[in-house]
Image (cartoon, rainbow, N blue to C red; front, side, top):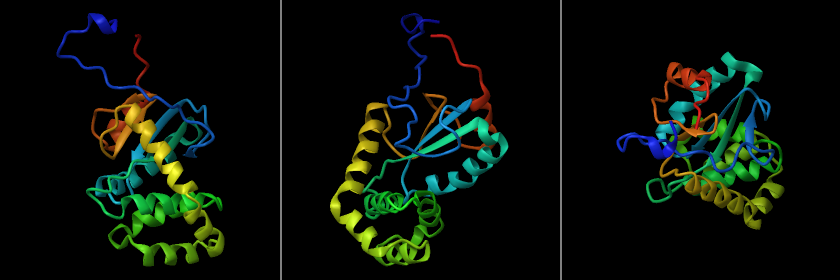
Length: 188
């Protein structure tokens, strides 16, 4: 049914403004049959709870699924959210975004400078390069880009998921997400 012909009580979910690209932190091949983009916050318990579910989906669908993570920190609710996102971006400069991503969620209750230093040593990251990348403003700029693309796509809080380019309005459980991913696209 065309958008103009929808009953007023039916709201079509927003679409992803920026599709998955090389700039994104992604697991699985870009251009995979299915795509899932998470706008997430390292300080959000709901985002932490999604980590295992998204890992299970990735194992189930293998190379048919590309999962991307974009930062959408809520620093008003979670004081460490913004800094944690910048730390993950600085880790990316050394090719270790996903390792830092996973460790930040594993140690979510400890977010703070002491944890960031500890994790940077454990991964291991070159600490001088890590510190330089955090100070340069590049990590902050990258977080800003993710937030801006999220706002343009209608994101208001994390986690917000986009399944095959459309905002997912259902549950974030494995079966619900698998069904949404495998649902044939609707006609405009």
